[in-house]
Amino acid sequence: MKKYIITTESGSDLSKEIIDRYNIQVIPMHVIMDDKTYPDGSFEVQKVFDFYEKTGTLPKTSGSTPQDNTEVFKEVFAKYPDVHIIHIGYSAVTTVSFNAANIAAQDFENVHLVDSKNVSIGAAAIVKATAQFIEDNPNKSPEEVIAFIEDICERTHMNFLPKTLLYLRAGGRVSNLAFLGANILKIFPSIKIENGYLVPGKKYRGSFERALKKMIKDFFESYNIESETVLIVGAPSVDDNYKEIILNLLRENGIEEARWMKAGAVISCHGGPGAIGIAGIEKNIS
Picture 1 (cartoon, rainbow, N blue to C red):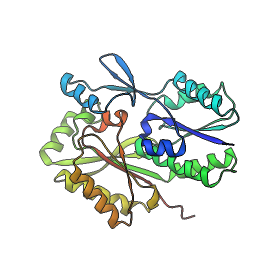
Picture 2: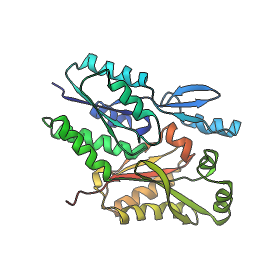
Picture 3: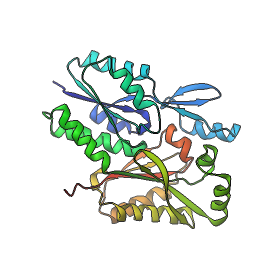
Picture 4: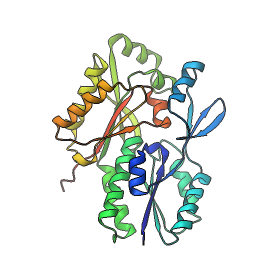
């Protein structure tokens, strides 16, 4: 008998392979274009970029609703009446999704919520690690599973490097002055996750390729990452050349099989075309 089902939002950018492998149930977040709301994952991400190019207006993103969560919870319990749902939520400080899940969970028993304090593949790394932990330890109590998740949330790190700052500027995260300065000086600012917030990381000068190499190098020098937890994400328009550069850098760090994930619409609204990110879970040295 199945004891646990993991749910999470579409903004975690899980690959179909991971979703199918661990039977993860995905709750849609939303993207708004021309006052029409689309479930995240229901359209090609390129549509976000095409809309911005055509209108000069950045699509808006919104979290999942209580109803979105209720529908998924109902479907799970209809199929597995005695299961415990472990909901690993998209960073609660960035969206209403976690609060929406909390509202929906009040109508059910055996729904356990944890704030991942992460987005995109940072959240995906936590979901994947939790799913594997449950598979390896099927008799763990819900409290033990939650304790595991809360621990790895604190050890999960994610950095991403936008190829263009147009989308961050359009979303108000970068000023016009900073945008102009970065273009003139050929500066690529990275973004990282701290306590659930997207915050500025290190700035790199030179070409995007040089900045990308330095970001990956800094990531592994800064954190003692468990190799099997490393995930890479790329928005549409990532050159195959950059993918090969990253895979070579990962091999240099002893990582032979990193998973390449496709950035969804939610994070792509911030990162823009060609953005690349890396995430992983730091080793527990205690």
